[in-house]
Image (tube, rainbow, N blue to C red):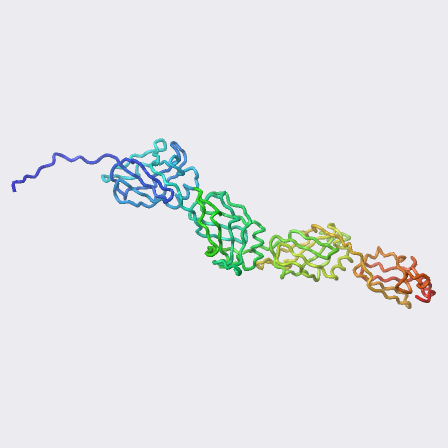
Length: 474
């Protein structure tokens, strides 16, 4: 009861600005830890006032986004950087890759101490170097992907920035179901491809035409989301710190997040005809379905100018398809069409062989009809192999009452090439037996039909026929 209260002699208000003593930064976790000389108020901490630099006086750097404050009031404040900031840092390639390339400065409104004193601002010339730096050791992983069969682009989205020039498409496989079964799963491993050049969380593989056409040929692969799955090995790509990607195994492949089907019409690029083997071949811009080929939509022309005096045209009628689904289609011409082409003197060389197609000639593997080829843009043959097979006489008939000799050949013959003096009539098949066989060779007084045709009519002259009748054994 004798105690006496003591009056304080005075009170000094805290007016000293907080000071940053050091900072640590982990590229692996994305956590930036600031250590101050005194306790600061977490609620006043503004990470967006911090700029990271790769060196003193650098004119380029990254100003952070707000991020997430992980601490309570105190001298140590931890900030979780946003994924966007972490990926931007990685994409810059020279920032925060080691202790020497990790510095920061900040504005005067970065933080307040518990008495409300603002920290003093710094600048690029007084930037603070990192105390402890932790490099990125976490392997990147695939988030999702989008396959566009129309453009041939495979878009891969990763959980962090990856280095574009480490991408190896040949380690990527597309399959038609999630868990590969040895005998049931349809799959295609890419043979290569072109890669987008930017280091980013997105990588674009421009699929090679050869791979794209093979994928299209496999009719149960990559036709919709539920038939489009991706697998790859750890060598497929690396992050910015040379960490291999987390592989996706064939037994647990990744389903496409988005899928774009092929909507592009197949386009005729070139064609060839071999008149000896009687085979034509059409070359398209992508895999086509052999079963949809309609040769009756194919027309041959002697040129593009329909007003030319020697212009000729013929629409094919029938053919036998010789190939399966592929980028080219081979077919055997019918005898009727071959004879007609020869009759019209079409397809004798590149100069008189052009083709047009209606837009229902053939379809690709996604049921897109071909692009029509119209006469003004008729495509000239890339190669013509002329007919080297000599015509063969199949049968003949002589009508002595009308003086008409009918010759039937295996193919159309050129009327102008017929020389009636080369035709001889014999009394027997074996003309080598001397004195037993009578023969007569027609003279130029007899004439042949002037029409190109497999059937040749020879009008035997009266003088020639009288000579034939004189030889009684004929």
